[in-house]
Length: 394
Image 1 (cartoon, rainbow, N blue to C red):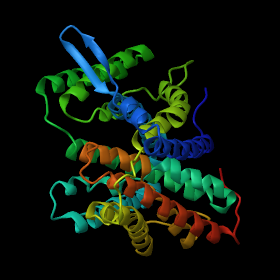
Image 2 (image 1 turned 90 degrees about the vertical axis):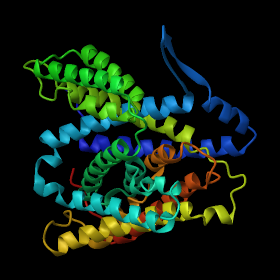
Image 3 (image 1 turned 180 degrees about the vertical axis):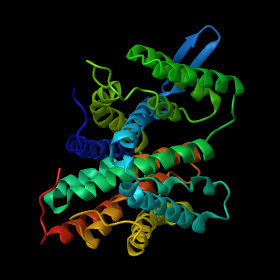
Image 4 (image 1 turned 120 degrees about the horizontal axis):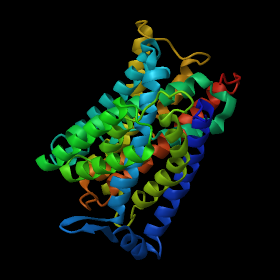
């Protein structure tokens, strides 16, 4: 039975990070070159399914954000369940520091953004934009550093990112849901109960879970709650324990989806969302409160929150520094949490619905902050590990 080892997970995420960079570059070239009109028309091609009175039609960009990203969150849900049941998150002592770091990495960026935008109710909708971290990008940079970064720091980052993603899911469910539909909620509830019944009955047929999962996704999409949450809910009902003579369904699906998500879903998402028009963006837009809130929230807020909260937890002996690393390396890792990129762009789309209100400087701010955080984090980790190259403990 194949499963995702920690080493394979990191390698997939790192390779995906490189593809994400290329996808973002191509998106910027398309948006700001002679293919701009084609790029924008392509993203807004209306696609859908009509069956009698039932209709589900959306522009291509929303099929990516609501559909493909639901697969991404489904994979996150599978990883989360596995980690809780038999992984790093099974032992409470091992997750104290990542929990503290994730909490600081959410609270401080949100406060920074609020400080700049508290007087503007519409702008304040984007308070969660700088709270997210793009794990693929961060791990990509860490893999380039090789043995200069101990394996314990990589494990810490992966665990922190899982907790960070859970918080992002809760934030979306609570703060970024639209008008709620009672009928859709009833259908979603019935689909969820169906998944629970399959799990309790020990059903090991993927098709049964897929059918109910699709019904759950459509009903959640129609309910007013963001459809990606359906992926997380469905994942928790996929059986983890293997029957005698059979492999674990959860681990098999996780193994099958990892490459698809890393090398297709996330790069496609980056391509359709990172195409930011630079026309009309000047110094005034860059120094707009929303842009400053995002840039400083990601770059300053993330590192202050993650490192500051963790430092206090270590100082008061509530947690321990990851093995084989020093404070300088740990600080460098905390700098990398400021790489928001795909997750921040995703929350940005939920906050402002791709409006031209800020001349897309809000999206550009995400890229600027991600580049600065990545460059400074890489530099600190490189210098901190220059005289202390260690053998990674896999």
